[in-house]
Image (cartoon, rainbow, N blue to C red):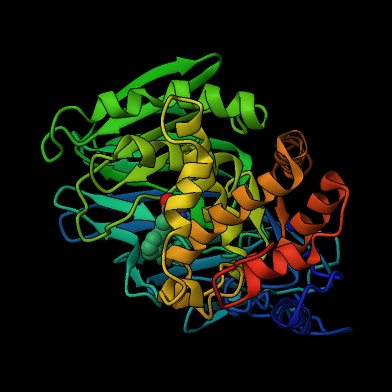
Length: 467
Ligand code: TRP
Ligand code: ZN
């Protein structure tokens, strides 16, 4: 499912105009009349992530993984719809040997160029045609190093792998249209040696022991961005509980993670109820989290329905990752420079959670963050224009992003503000958004021009003083 970027017609200031222009100047497809799908979707930070000319509906990933030797033997069946006539199209995949590649059952020619897997089907695909690509591939899954130096993708652990893909790790383990604009449903069949647990997104469909090991089948039935897919595996204790009709799958490495992690994960039920009341119904048909021992990762990730923790999280990290199920996973980015729409919302969610649970008020949290002196480098990177992919997860994205929301709350009042958050979610559930969309809805809900307000908070490289 590919939603068209709804980019800014609303020009706030110089910086916004630049971001919007960049995205618009790099259209999703190579050009009018071309039958060659573009190698990227023109993201300003990751221009080659994702591909043009088609729209993925479903991924069926069959993964056979043995940690000893770090070997993955896999088949991916991708169901997609051509958005125009296609004589050639790309997928994103890093590494691996491809054993066979078929389009609609017929062998297709392919070449590799960096992360691009370039496929030439035997016959051109008609516009609107739904087709399947079946790829048999094997080899070592790839860990991807981000522009900020952090590791993602298939990160091996002592007993398996910790699998997290934000922003560009997915092609390290499966062929993808690796862009948050192209969400799809997923089926996973993961075969691992007996004694190993494999945890993907969505609901557990079956678990079967056979002479080749254990096959774990999972299904995520809500559209999901590839960066939110997971297949973390290793020695785990898996516990299933429920909040209302939603099954929660909690997995903890019982050997390497200190006992007590299940107690932290157990708080999810209350947090889900809290955000469901505040923002609107929980977006997905399952939930849960995985606590592994992956010290070299150094962050947690809000994988859809299944937050990934590299070590036992604190209570506020559970709150943070769960709030991303609404903001980030269900309401998704269109372009990565808008990352504050994920992280600012998640930090503000921590603040409001504290406020409503006898902790500091969100205004007190704002005040503490705002107390950074004007000379601090913190103020030099405005959250919606951080200056490049190396700063995607820098503190202004998180804290100044959250401050922007709290400042908006005080400006338009609680009634308008909470209504705005509910409408933002209701309107964009399972969809993709931009900062300009948020500005527009805020102005509608707030009943005023907020041009200068958002420009000050999101785009100016200085500490806001009046707004
Ligand atoms: N989105 C994650 C969170 O805030 C953090 C994250 C994902 C991250 N990928 C990263 C942080 C890479 C640093 C580097 O929950
Ligand atoms: Zn986050």
